[in-house]
Amino acid sequence: MKRMLVVLIACLLLVGCQVNENNSNGKVDVVVSTTMLADLVKQIGQEHVEVTMLFGPGIDPHLAQPTGNDTQVVYDADLVVFSGLNLEAHFHQIVDAFSDKTLLVGEELEESDLLVSDGEYDPHYWFSVPLWIKAAKLVAEELMVTDSEHKSDYESNLNAYVADLMELHEWIEGRINEIESDQRILVTAHDAFNYFANECGMSVYSVGGMSTDSEVTASSVNEVANLMIEHEIKAIFVESTVPLTSVEAVLAEVKRRDFEVSIGPELFSDALGTQKYAQYVEAIKYNVNSIVESLK
Ligand SMILES: [Zn+2]
Image (tube, rainbow, N blue to C red; front, side, top):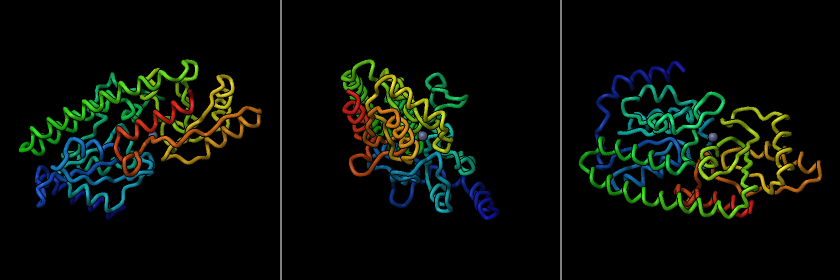
């Protein structure tokens, strides 16, 4: 711990001369926390950025702990983009030490756009496509400042990507409408889908809390089981970054009462996937298709 602090303080003293300097390959070195942000920065930055992400697919950002290497890559970066709103709950020290070159996207969004749960801002705003469009604009603005030489490229990449996101937004609406209105209930393992549900007129219930380290209690398992039976909900969804146990507890309870529920496909929640699912648009389409096919 002491060593980490010494490193951080040394970094603090040096950080001023690191900002806005492009590396020898001529690209802007951007360090991001999540897979969602990695895709967003690549979409806007294209050939002008080199993106390093701290949390890969399947890594839970609520629980991820910083390593010495994380401190080093952040120190070396030209720009750092974090999701904010306490998603990267164990990275406050690093964020504070490098605040000069760090964009905390969530903290720059309008307060009125954010959902609050148990007195805290819900950090899962990437599931709102309109908010992700705002996030794209924030990232583009930051790249334009860091690398003003390629300002017009960032601008046109942003416009093209916003058009893709708007198309995605409309497509989601159309697909969700295929589910009977009384079946538009999404039951998941942790509370990541409030923004998504809010936007497409679904209700959402989760067995766990907003952070994956919140405890799953017998009463919350019972509550969700009751709800599924009462509304005859066909599927409960598991998530790529959350262990199966809480979902299995609900399934067992539902089965005990002679009701059939299936486990829906694994949804991407706090991390995107690999290959084509490393792209936000593809991962969201996958989620929506999975939800619609399981509930309609
Ligand atoms: Zn989460």
